[in-house]
Image 1 (cartoon, rainbow, N blue to C red):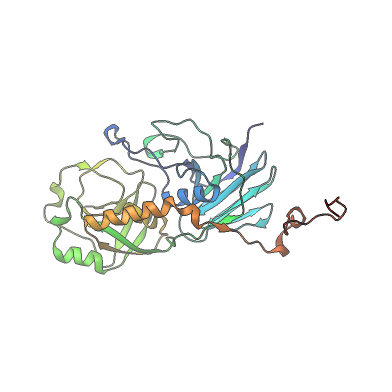
Image 2 (image 1 turned 90 degrees about the vertical axis):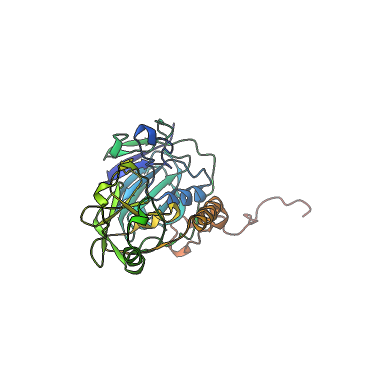
Length: 340
């Protein structure tokens, strides 16, 4: 029997996501993939599998799930209340989900996007090199109540591991590099961008996140004459009314709004996870600094597995306590022992 996970109840915006489809801009397709790519890496580290393993992304609200056989799971990204058969389980950790048990995941308590990972990954046919849904491009669909998801072969066995996540669920500092139109903005506007807090507006999805400046919109002379050209996730476009929008993973591939700057890829999860009203503060770094920061972050993500540690559970809350060998070398007392 092959492993499957049934969705008993799906949240309003639940999809399967991996690292997306880079290199498809010529086809008019943005990268897509997980809104928080760091959460994918964290889940992969907990389960000991590749960072691009297909996972389930939940926006703001989770759902209820049931496995047809024992499987390993991990929970990362925006923390959500989770239980297995009514018993609370730790977020940012890996667990055993027994066959027939019900995994319930509630609303996010911080951030926006939570992730459910399974040992072996979700199995789906790839399209243009990836299996992730890209709803803006018509690839894949939202997951629904009653869907059954196939699971790949799990070559691992370890569970009860936890990882300390980078705190990126309440806004905070975001680093920028200059973009193609940054020089068109006056020094006063660029200084204001770095001095004043911006707040995440209610308008936000996988295509873009609107920001509300404290001192009104940003403006440049001739901004409406910018030629339409390639845009990328992280670009901050300034619309006609002066409001900034950070383009996200399912953004369009071309645009004519001026870009005041571009968020470093390693900081984009902080923007994706910022809840409505969260304060974001931007500062520019030069290209050399940005490259060094990206290299350091890539190295850190590749070594996340080294930072996983055992999940310490409270014995008073362990219903299956007797199934654990808590002291190595313990015997029943009636075995034949050589030399005795």
